[in-house]
Amino acid sequence: MIEKDFVKEGLKRTRIDEYLETKLERAGYGGMDIQVTPVGTMVIVYAEKPGMVIGRGGKTVRSITKTLQNNFDLENPQVEVKEVKVPELNPRIMAHKCASMLQRGMQFRRVAYANIRRIMNAGAQGVEITISGKIRGSRSACAKFNDGYIKKCGEPSIRHVKEGFATVTLKPGVLGIYVRIMPPEVILPDYVEISEPEESDIVEEAPVATEAVQESEIQEEITGEDILEELSAEAEVEEITEEEDIETLEE
Image (tube, rainbow, N blue to C red; front, side):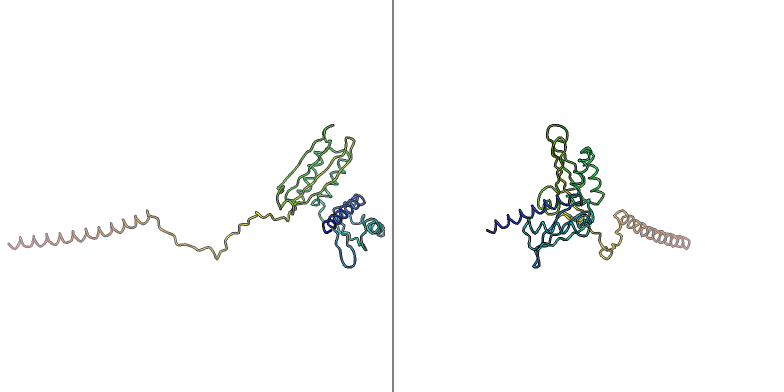
């Protein structure tokens, strides 16, 4: 029973998400979150243009609240609208922007590179845009465009990389746009920060004399002593010669 409840709840969330995406496509729908409270069910809607979600005099919000209560069996639903501060870092909004640009007839490479520049200029660490379908001719193909650094496997790719998907119907067929963005505030597990040592940790060492300097000092000391010994020896020899001269004269 517990497994069935989880599946039922997940299916309900998916249906609500699809309804809001269809209803608020022009408002720049960026996702939703459902929180169950003791008072009722809080549905938080993230949009690029909150004014279009609220509508004139709150008409659109009241219509959405009534639909959520009647068609999706939500108990006392309350809709709260929040503005997406940086739309370029929301993959769902950017996927729909790519779809609208393709709908206007722009070439898919130009669409991909233009949106990659916008996302990277907003401060993202990495981005990948995948466009699949009949983009070149009658046969289906897939084109990937990426920039920066983005994780593609492991737990960091699941936890930190945001994903968005959108579709667009053209004359050749349906195209799918898949956008993956790694936000600027993400810190990966393998990140290492090297800090500079503080001034108190630096110990000044006395200059150590090299072997050559030490040898030269020793040689200077030795030569000085030798000179003194030679001078004293010469003085003794002169005294001895003077004494011998005096003796010879006396004889």
